Image (spheres, rainbow, N blue to C red):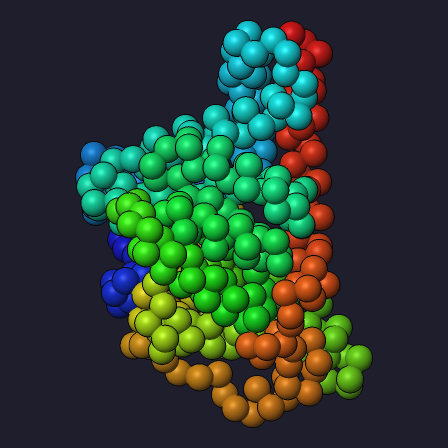
Length: 399
């Protein structure tokens, strides 16, 4: 195992790239211990040094992780990581709020998870002059089409701390919320985004909101905007291969990854060409394809040189750290600027699902709700949210 891991080497050749932790920071220490259990004992000391460089509140400006993304499912993982601790916290909340029902307790617990995580990244937030060290707290996934509910939740989440960024879905109602929050100087992260129409819509909504904020003299010192592209979900959850088969086109795993990257690169270029203030954020990353017997990570290799955010869940990070031959992967300078091969784009454009997702005007706002991976992701996130509500309900029963 090399001293500097894949992520560190990627950042070394990509000025402006930020690696974020895609989970609650409260599970970081337990995660480190679990990685050591899986690793070759000969690599333990190197890994411990890498862990120290990933999150270092004593020297935050030198640490690898520059921010955090969370949502109710990820917060559920934090609770499952230490249920006894969170049950005790729930009892404390109930003692101070005896009239809470399980939905109310869930929301207070969720905000507490967000608060604890944001406090862990406050040293970076302050050291970077409020440019980094943000933690995204998501509005309730069950409210994806309810503008008023999202506005109420967003203002509560934003009030948790100065480095809390509000995560808002890419629905018609979500973009109305993002423009409103931006106009108030509240930082946002646009999630549940898969196609170019959404990514462009968000960038333009943020631009309008920012213009309003500046016109009204709003303090923007704690403001940032990131636009999430849930890459692997567009191909896998959206079943790009299946859509291809419907029109007689077979796609390899590698071609699916490049299709997802084609959308990301086009959005990245749109922001760059129009000098827009938002920053692209890449998530739902997948290891693959396998080339000449080596597992590649095209979702990241193709972003070499990009001034973008890449958020990685603990399971993905550990997989990459322990991947055989990962140290053999070499980065090509400024790969982000290279287009996906035109012959593949021509092939993909024969698939209506891809063609619509690749066009800036492929979907209207009213059609965002019909995007297959949006529907499925919202359903998954809502299910996890309900599990967190059930945990709150069990705590109520014990109270």
